[in-house]
Length: 344
Image (cartoon, rainbow, N blue to C red):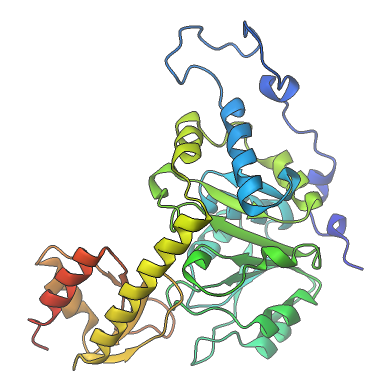
């Protein structure tokens, strides 16, 4: 039986969290004299908890989860940092990553002096399950899975993840791009797996990258401990208010997904007809990875014409690969027109 209390750092288990003024009183009042704020109303003179309660209610309703099953962060990176801090003891514990993938996992681990064990994806960018199992040690606390994966755009095998979830470690599934996929989110499996954490973001499909808002879904026990160690006002008033106003509903997300998929299919078809494109990878994200005969030259060619793409050659198995984000119809028109003039 998996026991979360044996996985968190011992000193955190008994930690008394900071209690802010707005944690101690959550109702309405006429006069607020408890938090040393200025009384003049600027729209931002009060601490953000009241606005955050509204955002939590909106997310709870949209994801059909209780508020003790998720936490809101200052972007997904803050949440990932909190997860490593909660479970991993510096200089002793390790996390498993699967390159090529989101490189921030390793950066965050290094900042906290936590070792990273790299188990590369296979040649088809699939999880190498047997190698992952062999890599797990008594000090492995986290297994990081990005699905759909960045930069490959591939959804991780459900069977592979189920095998990982049977191990004595926390499996963190980063679903930053899940809204662009037909795959079912692992949020639906939270009740079944107490060692499962799912992270998402409002930066991609919700179009709120500039607000820096991330989401973490897990058991109420894990969320309880993450709430203990997070900063008391980690989400600001402006972000909370804007998110309440701008968050898309299910119908809008479905329309957005349809538009992205159409442009993604169109781009992939075009790239497959380009002589310089060695391999175009299928994608379930809002980007396409393509292996070129000269990624540096293509990147510079496009940049000289005001179009910026990302060279991912530094990533494992991604030599001469560029990653192209799916833009608007007009932006994709311009990209394709420009690439038609490229001479390899």
